[in-house]
Length: 391
Image 1 (cartoon, helix red, strand yellow):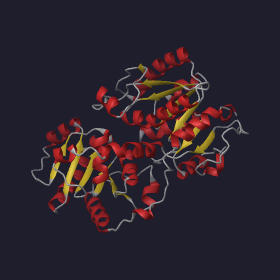
Image 2 (cartoon, one colour; image 1 turned 90 degrees about the horizontal axis):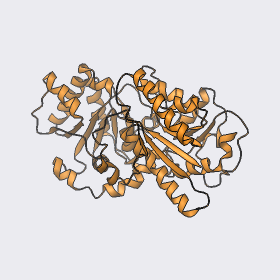
Image 3 (spheres, rainbow, N blue to C red; image 1 turned 30 degrees about the vertical axis):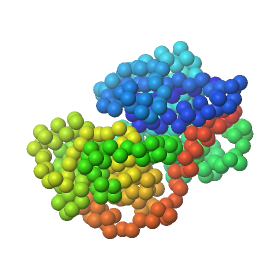
Image 4 (cartoon, helix red, strand yellow; image 1 turned 120 degrees about the vertical axis):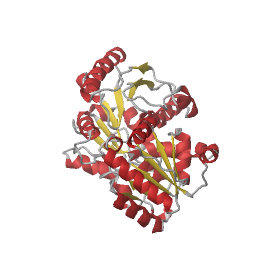
């Protein structure tokens, strides 16, 4: 079998890594039934962290193709990607194309009638003003097999008319017969768990060795609030940025050490707005490596973020989270009481912080909503069964 991953940003490389490890393990165990793996980097996002060190530190496979699509309007980006991805697909002719989350690259695979496997299928924020929401919906409806991370994602797809749902949408276990053929021609929907949980469990041990980041940032474990802001709806709106910063400054003035990890581009915007905070309890740093980020997340007392991935990682590491958006794809974390969605209103941020700070959290109360850390293994088993893709 030839499997081709299409990724375009740093988080997607990380999401692809458990699959690569599972494939390597399979190929060693079954040399007569190997999976040939290829990786396309679309290059659609410039990323400060996408250096060779990034790949070496996390032991990630290097891309086989660099398309260099670059940034630009969604129309230009999609058109350029269609052209370049199609060229690779016609040359390689993979048996299946794996895509991760919201991506512009799905159309090229669908046009060539190559089966698409969508990892993190079924996510919905129910805000179609966000480009990634449209991409998620299009990708799901163009895919042959939809690997869902949670039962909520399964329900979202069921509500959109998907009916070929394996195991009634529950997480498949070791008793599942992967060789069973699908009885329908419609796309297959299956709950395998979350590959990001696979990543968190795998890398958390390595992150424990990252003591240097605490000394570098002047932090003591469990005595700081960690904040990240990167979404355009916040970074491109001065009123949102100002509100978030004023709320963080107020939190710092009340005695909590606040650490904000901010892209240099956004920091420049702040300087142009005249937003400077001399408060020694509130400091801004450039983004850190993935392992350092995990170390900071695991050891924070609370996390404030507009990142979907960071919301989940906060849950994985049993750290309460405040989401600086008006909605979230990860409603399970909210339902379980570990995440509060407050938007960018100053009072709501402060009220949320005070409430979550006063709340007692018991990790034993957490539900295993993201699986057991074996999502990549399940994905491999399903793909190797083969028949499930053919209907």
